[in-house]
Length: 171
Image (cartoon, rainbow, N blue to C red; front, top):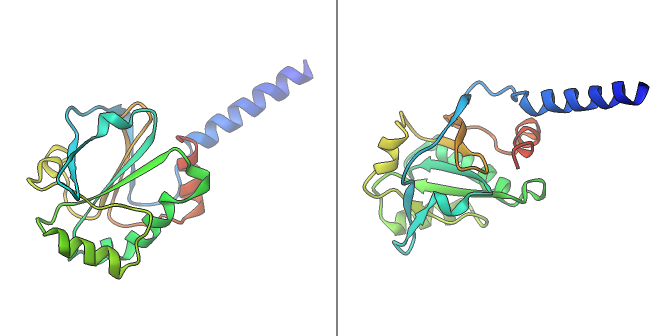
């Protein structure tokens, strides 16, 4: 009986920990994870990238522009997040929605010494409309089933340990 009580305790405390939201004022959890049709964007070679191809992975779409100061501030920590060994099943797609040319975006990454991320584009701004973005940066988090379960409106420090530990529960 004691083992059963300990087992139930461990399960319930771990479950509640997984649902515990880190203390970030701009993190919004989606109560009923949302599915989107046709989430397609371009890589630097103008080839289509389809979010559906990454089912089974935890995916982050980060929308940014080169002229956005908060984007510039958070991008290095987002770069670090991509290489975090605690999140081996994570795939991050920083998507430029600024209608800027490739050279400007490449300079932005070079200036910030971004090494773990590649540049993607939402050239006709279809995703910005689809996700009803209100500004940049905006980060959308998708679970392994390809459903949006959270979004970050504005910038954060992606090196925040509480955020990483929370995100790890979805990995």
